[in-house]
Length: 125
Ligand code: 5GP
Ligand code: ZN
Image 1: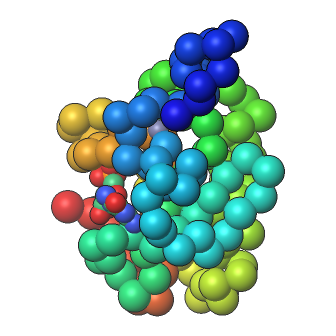
Image 2 (image 1 turned 180 degrees about the vertical axis):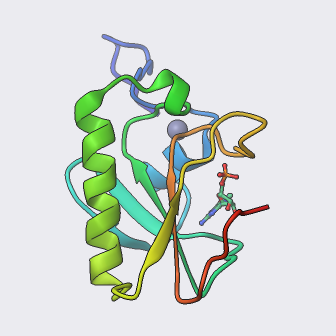
């Protein structure tokens, strides 16, 4: 909680109800496996592949519809590539950005799933 009188705790880059913002702010204990200035990555709590990592911007963007920040979107994919490289996913990996209800998005803070360590068939479910 930001108690500065100038903004009364209002932080437009963050959503106090968002679980991923809590991870960014270290209000929820999660092992961070990758970090740069703008992104963090951590293991998914319910992995669907031997490697299942979530890469998220530190700033809160609800989803791909609402993220118009070209710089952030480009850097998100570069962060995915760095995570995949660091995790030794040279045989290939899948990147998924679920968007909205029909996309299966359950956490409303944009994130890229990085899935590796097995063959991923197409089409997905
Ligand atoms: P979505 O369905 O929105 O694309 O993906 C959200 C992902 O976040 C799911 O795969 C889910 O398992 C993961 N997840 C939800 N809550 C937590 C949490 O508290 N910690 C971690 N590490 N992963 C979470
Ligand atoms: Zn958030």
